[in-house]
Amino acid sequence: MKALAAAAETDGDLIARYLAGDERAAAELVHRHAAPLARFLAVQGAPEEELEDVVQDAFFKAFRGLRLFRGGASFRTWLLTIGSNLLKDRRRQWKRRQVIELTPDVRDPAGTPEGEADATWTAEKLQEGIAALARLQREVFLLRAQQGLEYPEIARGLGISEGAARVHYHHAVKRLKSWIQ
Image (cartoon, rainbow, N blue to C red; front, top):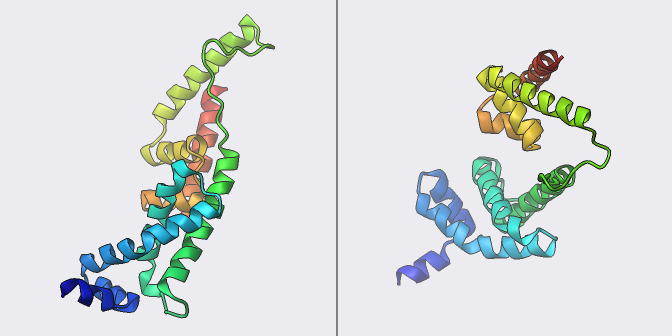
């Protein structure tokens, strides 16, 4: 009988329960919509190895913005739109983040012993400079330069404004340039 009552609840009912503090309502929304969202994103071309992360991030973003949901469309349509937008953002990140792993057996054909020594020295100085940065500058720099994250993501992750993330990155780059030179 309890299963029938749960099935009879609309997404709107579950949203209201969640906004009132009932975490089980959120779990039911995820249970109802995770598989359809994953199928939708897979059809849109989400790589299989990234699919779970994109689905999870879409739900995270949806639950964070649930108070703004007005019900003009169904919850599922709204969630699919969020997922689609996240996938577009991720595609841009993936294009920029094409990583080629260098191993000792992969050498630069144009490399000279002098060039390799300079590169080693520069890498060591860069590591020292990063370690010397203030904590927020270091975190913002690494999230931006190493992980390829955008400023809004960095700001959300560190609990700072987007403008502050930009300023910390700018100062980190400026300090690192002067450290290396």
